[in-house]
Length: 590
Image (cartoon, rainbow, N blue to C red):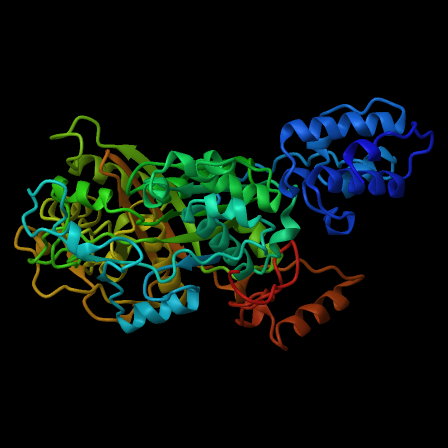
């Protein structure tokens, strides 16, 4: 049956969801030249393959079929056949009035309740990441053949035109893998999607599952997405052929769509933005997420970053910039520091106001107490670091946290292993943390494990530090053989964590994470270990004093707070009930 034949009938006086569904299904099938049975009524019309012109003609035909005007906007408000039919039949539930934003108390801590990652060395889960860190994994390897022919691009002379001086990088396995069907993305659209979009979507999904939140349950929620991204190389990697540009290319290539893709897939309606401040992008994104949660713009937030190396041009450019270590190591704070090695992957943290996380019984890996962002301003060149600005941003984050710098025991440093960057960072850290210390500030850098993930580097450090706080241990920073002679470790009260070690217990464990962009944007995140859930207050009600006392006794296992035992109840320190939004989901990233 042709599309014209489908729409040749007279108008209908009755409107039922079944009638509208049948009409739309048959009409869409005619437009797409498929059988009506193959039309998925739960997918948006656009995803089924209808462009704007065909959607407009479909609405016109629907108006004729129903013998009443159907405004064009309803297809965007109700994008699936099922939703549109229910609306036109009057059976769709009225949209609930949005809840008033919940503005947090000034400086309320933010809980890290979920982690997601995909990193070099086959690291796809938080558990695998912690194992890699404790094992001292060095995931750097030669450029794989599916990226570019390293021999054609390699020259040990960094001045050689159009050549790179390194064969190394932190590369992922099978970067093209993607379960498009799970996300209801057509094969044609998936082919035009930058792998950074695909990976960010998968890792965000996995992070929500790690937080015990069913991703699909968040539709319509005030959930924000803040993701760092930089280079766009997919069109170069696919040949830059103008004849290959298709309907989905504009969306597939645009970095601003990376977080938008997550929001669209899950129906999230909080703030959504891509952040590009170079190597500080993902920590700047985290800063914005924390602000959004505190302001009440978001009730839940995803923050992180993604980076994929698909074409040699960026590595060539960084060779000319003078940043690459030809030996393929980030030797943070070491005498052999000679540049960094590039890395790729993605990391996402799920964030919630601490009061909400405790009320929901969430597992809390760590708590963000404060954040800060600033810029170097006019330093000794656009890309030259400014030690005073770095010190200022670190100090501001701990002021936001309300914590004295002398109480901070660890900093996950920017730590690239560059000749200039490491001494500047060490001096800035000493300026903030040296005074009044009883023991040295410990330093480390996940770049020594996975390479420098550039816009995603900060969130990798955040993941590492959250896990270290969670386990009470400090993983080793690799490739540290001899202290950099240009750093006064003694005066600055600094030491590098060269071996895996227990994290000494203090009244509270505090740690910072730094990220400095080569355009001058600096970010620092102040972390605290998760609260002792055994001491979480739990409200109790009873119909009398004795009943209340009996409840307290039962809750505390026979001892009361007055007897010196822990105060009333609380959720366990780990695990706990599912977060709001659903029961624990099985499996990992798709």
